[in-house]
Amino acid sequence: MAFRPIRLPLPLAGLLALAVAMGIGRFAFTPVLPMMQADLGLSLAQGSWLASANYLGYLLGALLVTHLSWSPATLLRLGLWLVVLMTAAMGLDSHWLGWLAWRLLAGVASAWVLIGTSALCIARLNATGQTERSGVVFAGVGCGITFAGLACMGLTLAGTAASQAWLWLAAAALGGLVGASMLWRTTDAAPSAAPAPPASGSGGPAAPAGQPSTSETPASPSADTTTGPHAATPLHWGLILCYGVYGFGYILPATFLPAQARLLIPDPWLFSLAWPVFGLAGAVSTVMASRLTRRYTRPQIWAGAQVVMAVGVLLPAVWHALPAILLAACCVGSTFMVITMVGLQEAQATVGQAGAKRQMAAMTASFALGQLIGPIFFSLTHAWFGASLEFALVLGTLGLLAGAIPILRLRSPAASPRGS
Image (cartoon, rainbow, N blue to C red; front, top):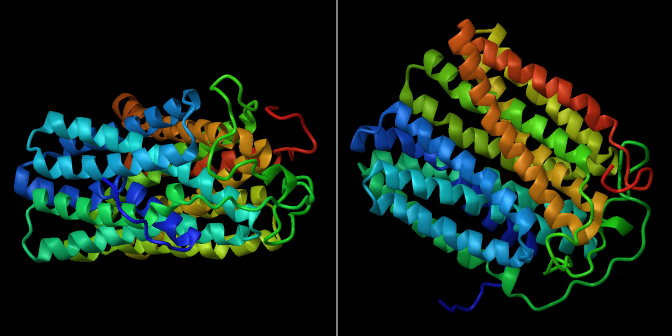
């Protein structure tokens, strides 16, 4: 299908790409689930399996990227089309096994778009001296979550069936794809960046705002310079492990905070507002956090955000009240995309453009693995020891706090060999 791409500013095009992939491909299932339960008789257990299929697809998608020689532009294009098609398939199919397949493939596509968009946009913004505008790109996740939540609220009020809701979301995803298409259709090469001090690490000051580091200078902003899956720059395993611990700590509150909120908020409409608010906090936070790089290094921002998230996770476990839930939603919603943004920026700075795609893919796979292990670990402890919902939140808190310590100890690329 050929169409004339809309010429949008690069950050806005990146925002649209992430809004489609994450807001619809990944997270739209949360506000649509109650509609599927009411219209299609979907059980809570079946809904959990569908969510797990998406988590598994996210992991598989990231693992595939580490072995594929596709350019970031190819990943982005194929991933967005797959999100559109899989979202429409959810509305056209009425079988649970089919839904499992579509949600798994949507997870694969979401990982491809996140990695492709991050590699393309971070490189191009660094090359043109617009590093701080990465916050606009990563605000797309929160914007997509907010849009999906509000759209589902409106569709529910209008009496729209769940299958039709999926089709409306697919149409919105197609519109976002058209807007983001300039990311892979542009033929203008970004100018080469001038040499600059090393990227921010735990051992030195951050580079001036808007000035890219030498390790962030892309050889080609639209293609991965790796000649094959085995010729890539060595991976930085410290970043990979820290990102996996973050995934483990994040998914426990993301999974169980909604259950805690339903116990304390009897009004379903009041509860449904929590999801758009969560997304709005995520959208605003990345724009604000991008300005903090003037004073703090990326590892410092990452660790600080993880501590704030830990505080928010612990609150409902020790304070069983509605304000605790609202504060927790703000703490988690305002930090989860900040960590994602600075983590992937650090990946770009650490290994350079030649290995950025593979490093980001490995970190995304590590996050997805931690995301899968978290609920399984809680389920086993609940079955064996009768662990409560509060135990899951305390466990998530401890994981986030423990994971913040090694982040500050990550050595800068200039101080240690790559891959150490």
